[in-house]
Length: 262
Ligand code: PEP
Ligand code: MN
Image 1 (spheres, rainbow, N blue to C red):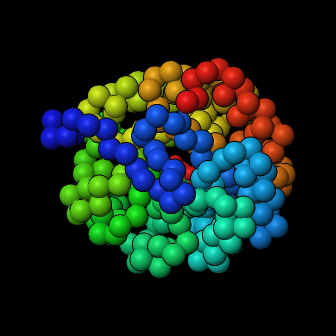
Image 2: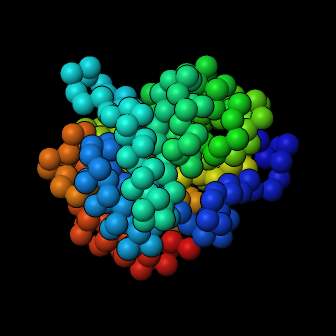
């Protein structure tokens, strides 16, 4: 809380990447790590665009048990190898407290997903390690619940926590979730942690990513997350909402051209 700490927390990543400082962060990459080829294709494109942190899910929290569940530890290895080849940092979701320790060799940031925002044993396990954590807002979490979830990690000693708004569930059907832009200034006011916005999962539609990213940055977000896949139509998860590489380049250029991406 700002009550106990006035200064913004800066997240210090390898390669001198800082989150929460003067520079905005763009986290991009596929919904899921599907293969070496797919991951390396994205990594090459991201590195060329100047991206520093690549995402890619290996443990996928899918709504249906019959959908692709991710490549698990193999996926983390593929992500790490592709990232290393192109000088990128990695972020991937961990869903099991027992996987926190083994993941440390593969990820530069541990992602805790929306569905696990209140998995308290997972939060505690993430709080025990010396690795930055990106905590996603739960599908129906209040600001208070979100910040208390972050506090579970911080109170165990890991102070390297970032928050990310990823849309909440409302009655609206024209977007996958409802992007709660007000969360950004509220979280920035109430907390000293960096705040990001996931434009892909909050909207679920590619045609409004640029204005939503601009709104997030204008509201004070420290970074944006977006999904990119070499051939979204064939993606094993979130096929409808991922940008292809050309679309990503256009998206990133438009966001930068707004002057809001620092
Ligand atoms: C993701 O970012 O891969 C993801 C599953 O998002 P969320 O937890 O926000 O649904
Ligand atoms: Mn996804």
